Image (cartoon, rainbow, N blue to C red; front, side, top):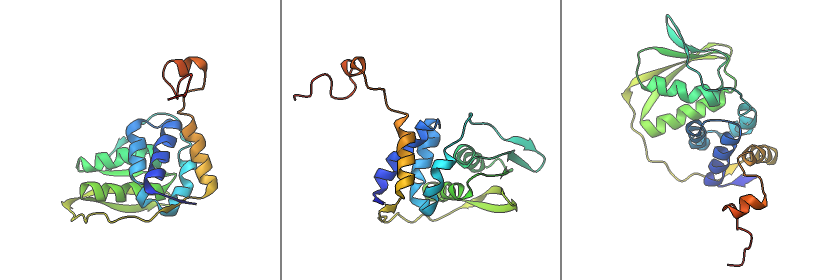
Length: 183
C-alpha cells in the first residue's frame, strides 16, 4: 500500500514507543524511514525487543555490542562512532543489518559524516567513523513508500499500545472530544 513519508514516519515513531523504545531511539528510527526501502517490512520483528539500552563492552580493539539489536544498539553505536573516540564499534549477532544500514544512511545525510562498515563475521559488523566530512546534497522530494498491509497492521498494533484506554474519567479529564462533541 502506498503511504506518504510523513504518515509512515509518524506510525514508526508511535510503533517504536509502543514497543518500548525510548523516545530518542524511536525518533532516530522514524528519521531513517526514507532509507529503509524494503527493510521496513522487517521492522515489526526488529521492534520486538525487550530490555533497556546498554553500553558496549570494552575490548582491546573495539567497543562491542553482543547480541546487537539494530533498533536499540544501532543509534548508540552511531553516536559513539560520531564522538570519534578512536575505537571501532562491533555489533555482534546483529538482528537486522538492513535497518542498521538505514540508520547509517540517515546519519550520513544529517551529519555529513560517513561510517566505514566492515563485515567481520556472518552477522557481525564493525563501524568506524571517517574523519573527513562529506558534501551532503539537499534531499529531493521522495516518492510515496510502499508498505505491505500486514506490516502496516502490525505497526498499528504496536502504536496502539501508546493510547490511553477509553473511559468516562479519561474523557472528563481531557482525552478525546470530551463527554459532548457538539462544538
